[in-house]
View (cartoon, rainbow over the protein chains, first blue to last red):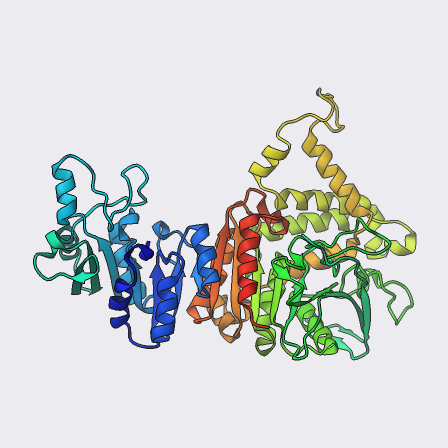
Length: 197
Length: 372
């Protein structure tokens, strides 16, 4: 889904990555982010995706891709195997949210997650007139959406606080431009750097 | 899709003795092999295709005098195919102990002048790979661009990366496993007992009696076929369909599945050697690279340097996706490059031989990445 947002989130994520790191990208899609981080930061790593078309696309993109079902966790992956575990715009597609974030922080020193903010002004306006929001950040109709969890920036931060997940940095964007004023209302996408509490 | 066309098997004799895992030494041996495509000047485009239990060196193409004898992986190997013989020089070899021309139980034992029979030593996956390395030397291949195999062929691809880490750049391990489970060994043991207890087996010296242990070999193959297919595939293909439209209330063939298994079993006895079957099932049972590392597969794979492609099939219960994931996790632990595809396919273990579009697309995409 990353292609919907161009590259700005790639640039943000790349800033958080130290050259040569070990990276795991969950829900890697066609592997573009890994390919980008390989080229820009010389990272070593793997993408994980359970969609056969994405696995094929990622192989064509020259990255390591593993067809695993994230809902079943990462039990076979060692503790601390990665410097960063990334989930770019995929957290809302996973049912077992908290177990997965905990798995990310078990196998990685730090997690990077980005997600569409359901609390964005345009989404609130859609709900106010009685329709489910459809936007650049949430481009699907309610009946064909791969998203299974709908949450706001405020919801996510509350979840982290309740589960002892350390929010180390949050960056917010609206159509690719940085947002600082009331991100829960004004940002369509949030990116976080998370650590163990 | 085009085929490699008419191919001709080659034979090479090796005079240097080879010490086998079980302690025996063969003073000399022959290998039969086939090649497709052209080896480039740098010798950097060679791919070895390892065969499974009943396979052979005849991977692709047909023989001039046998136009219907199509290689066992012809749908994957050829010009423009996933393993493209326009880019790669592909080698297929009949393994040591085989029955398609390489030295095996049917060959004459130089000490007696009679067929080895049961005196042919049990060989292992490690031995096969050591022997394949002799062939690589002979062909002038210092390093394979890739070694590819399905099932026990995948074990050989994995073993190449461990025994000769410097001599293989990519390993494609398909529908395989790092070791057999107790259930896998159990099936093999029933197959062996069927052969060993056949009165026509004569302790493995049946050639001298002019017979073959057809009943045992037939049962072994019937049992094997059950494990190669999935429950759903069998249901789809045969269901409870009757052979003659009504029940016989006897012990003939009532159901189509019975007819299929009998046919497959009978056919097998006309071309496959019972001693080779015994040897190959033992090689399967013994393969366990983690054994020397206290069962630690991660430690066992630490010496591999190749990049890997691992694939499994959703309905394969003989070597299930879980077994392939064990290999993947151990490679990840060691920081090796690895891609893993779990392919949705209803045909069970035999899926790896089928022409599934997505399966062939991912294998082809991986081969496209391999530099020559």
